[in-house]
Length: 251
Image (cartoon, rainbow, N blue to C red; front, side, top):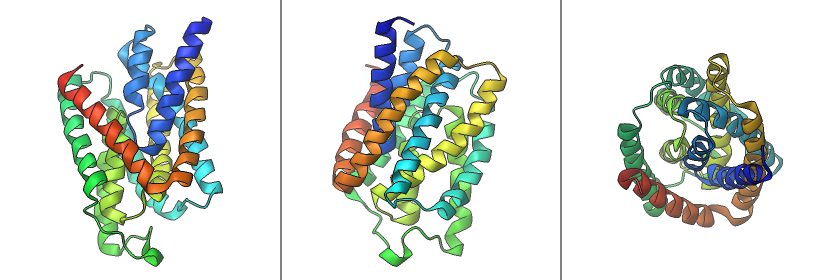
């Protein structure tokens, strides 16, 4: 790889990792960049997941070191998402991009509404992060379908996880982001295995991108803890609006 290509990959990865940890949509930067560098779309999709997995490991470790992590709740929601991601990744070979981009844009606007209006009231602090029995099964079903989407396309799944966790738990955005990166990391791992078996990974590009994503994830998780919900909400509003409009109008 040339120096210029390495700089482009690292810069794009850093921006994507920062956005992914705080909200989502970083793959809408990295996948087109990988295609621009000459990868077929399926291989770009798979290669991108190498960076996403490393990025989420870094973010989880950083959130955990700062006391923002709930392993039990994370596993409760991550296991059905993992199963769903295997199904989704198996049908990711031929993506109907135009239709799914329009659906994703509408989902992003729904998340934008949640970020601005916060219709879900936060539950009391001692209950934060817990699921009552009557919410556990619906929550696991919801994350099974989120896993299918994540395995299928991946781009923008962070927004969907944030929306689901906001409605299910009412937790702060900082804690929601700590759960999101763990859940996302597990089902990225399962879908990545499908792409590896199918030979859809460019390891040199993927590992270089992982360095950039990891730096962005470290910066993003620190930013989330220091700045809190207010700044995360601002970033969500800006990124969701831009990416949703891009998907709708293809500019």
